[in-house]
Image 1: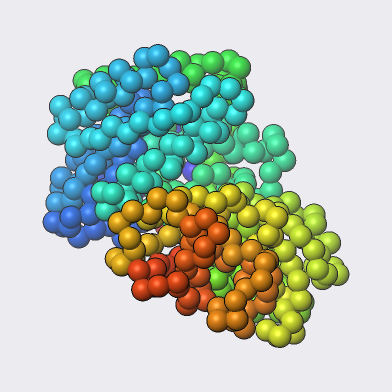
Image 2 (image 1 turned 90 degrees about the vertical axis):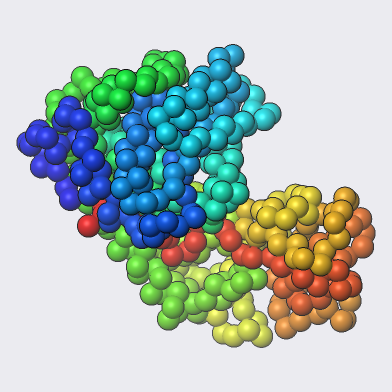
Length: 437
């Protein structure tokens, strides 16, 4: 619930009192469902080694113990600092010494340079998601707190973000692999610091958190030097915008149920007048495989006069024999490169490969690519428009086509079990919680 701007008490984001186990349990309750007692599925926690994530790991340790659940801490070494490997190893040892099972993950090939923070974040989430899949975990807990949320909202306010951006970070968001859960968005950094200090186990201080060249550091300093009401106003605003964003999510789901359809082949079928702007934004992001929302101005212009066009990695064209409306499909020129046909691989940011049980043990030289616009043998044609067929994922070895799963075709029985599942990074009807009840 929103925090009153003039209240600075034990429940306030600005409180310094140590977060208690019952308070943490109350924060976790609306973010379920959680596994049943004794379940093999672990609750995963991302631990950087800093005070915030270490505090979260300690809180989750006690929370899972009471409920008979398994816990797994995941520690990522980005390899960006000379001391990072040692710090990560020490963090794992520190966690294990406090009865927290921990696994060390290493990011290979990440180099310093432009946008290193963005690249490191993407690499971190990729390796964390993979580790969760391997462990059977569907919940990944993150240690972002009220200070991080206030910084995020302030940064987005300064960049003239829209209402969805001003909702800040979600307390819960479902990705293609895991549920990302942030139970501490209403808890101050000081309350978390008190948790780890009381444990006596120590933590790692990342020097980049104090680099005055970093935007986050400057915003953090500004918030600390401001009056207490500034942080409260930012957090209250995030909750208000978050409630609005969730209402729009529900509206998109309703619109797709009655006014359009998103097909497993990765395209959408839309009515003649298209859908409202917020639904079009969601569909374009999903069909295009983008991690971020497209600009709204070209979409507004499109809705005033629907016409064929390309936008943000997608193509809008008349539906033709599929009906009187429109097709929204992947723009062929924006499709990602070929990649090795490894089981579980994500191709074009949208499809997950399942090679099946009958596939050859060795897949050397076998790749995933788009079917393309070249001639298609008669025996694998379908009712799908040629433009849609060209964007479908296929399995090849050199020039030889091995499988087109969406058209139920394979070159032999060993490839008949190959499947591609349409799993974009973000679904059209976003499953996120910004203001837990």
